[in-house]
Amino acid sequence: MSLKPDQVIQILKSKLPRALKPPLERTPQRDGHRARTKTATIAAPPTKVFALLVDPRRQVELDVTGTVTGIVEPVPTRLASGVQFSLLVRRLGPSRAHYTVVEFEEGRRIAWAPATGQRWRFELTPGSEEETVVTATFDWSTAASSGMVERLGEPDRYEAALGGALMRLEALATGRKLPADDEGASSH
Image (tube, rainbow, N blue to C red; front, side, top):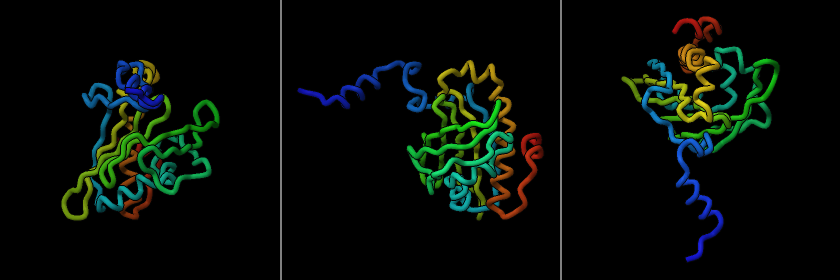
């Protein structure tokens, strides 16, 4: 039996230990040790909430850290599995951050990650009539270096940001005024 080169590569990748797999191909551990989560009930149907999450232009409005300053053109019209997008960010100075959608289930779940592997995930569950329960997670179990993520203080920083992002998502979904950045980041 003769294998094609891409088949050989897939077989080899499947045999690699988790630590050697590229970060974007790692499966989240989902054990809670390397993830921070916030949950909110939003007074809007799941279709409306999900439509906001798959619109890459909304990333600037959802960010409460003050890091995201814009989006890099060309912008995909809608996020889906494997779609890449780039944001203008302010860290030590202006730069670009590139993300790939690494988890996607239409109307239920979306997660994106930079090349370093940590993920921002939103999971939607229909609540009571016209409500959506949204769980936002910062998951660094898939990061190239989870220890570095922890040393940089990202879990605590992003845990606070998740609550603020949920407040902003609710405001966008219900048509209310967006909360100020410091309200969203410090209220959780």
